[in-house]
Image (cartoon, rainbow, N blue to C red; front, top):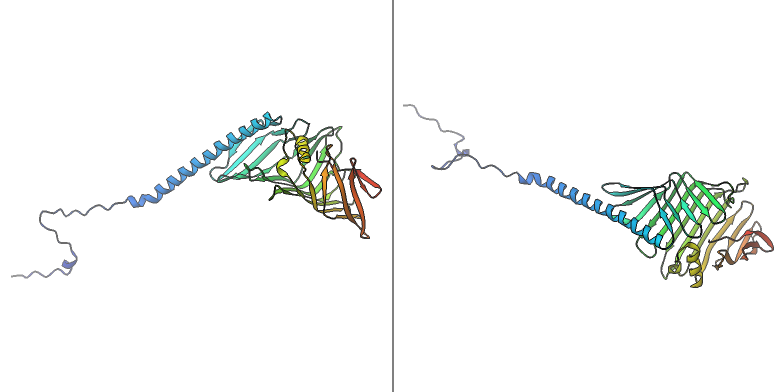
Length: 319
């Protein structure tokens, strides 16, 4: 009688009890789809957040425009586009124009702005085709440059930070308009940075400035000052806002002022200045004059700038 050989794999085979099915249970695969479900939820939340930020930006633009128009300003544009999904808010305004009641106006063929969707209180703007500045009684200047940009941060607060930068700028007056003091500049920067105690730092820097005469000596200016009573700069137009600030006791304190005309260099000592109701700067700066390191007084009075007994020209105007 033949003997059955033992199965060497018998210990590894499952033992099935009578009455039980031999089919193996199907494994659950839900966990395989959880990462995709999470990504879909996050994408939907991001899309909702971006659309919410877009709607708020559109509504905010309309509210701000209506508020400024109610105060007597002009703020308009012909077309508006908001792109940048999903992380940015890219704003494009065609033919924007801003003007006050006294004749000051700023217009551009196009302005482009950019902000992160999660931080809509800080914006960077560029004017790719330049801008036009209209001056009351002096006509319009067309400004073009290699780069023209500005930034605003702290939107919604009472004291936002403002910055402007222009690289390789050219200012061209329209026919019958008064020529600018500076017709071109390699660099122009202006910064307004609010600080404590209702003060703000005002910085102006000009490098490589030249007049329409094409003088060989390039103009260099560095102006660092502090404004007191910043919150008092308010009114229906720029001159009214400055006059309100003057009446409230606002003072412009010069921390550093340098003027370089190539052969003549002026360096001012720290001192407070004021602004007259006509918009001209008023006061006196003690300056050292190089070469020679002599000391002289740079006076802003009666609408004129004088260095000692020599009249240099009109006093700088704030409005």
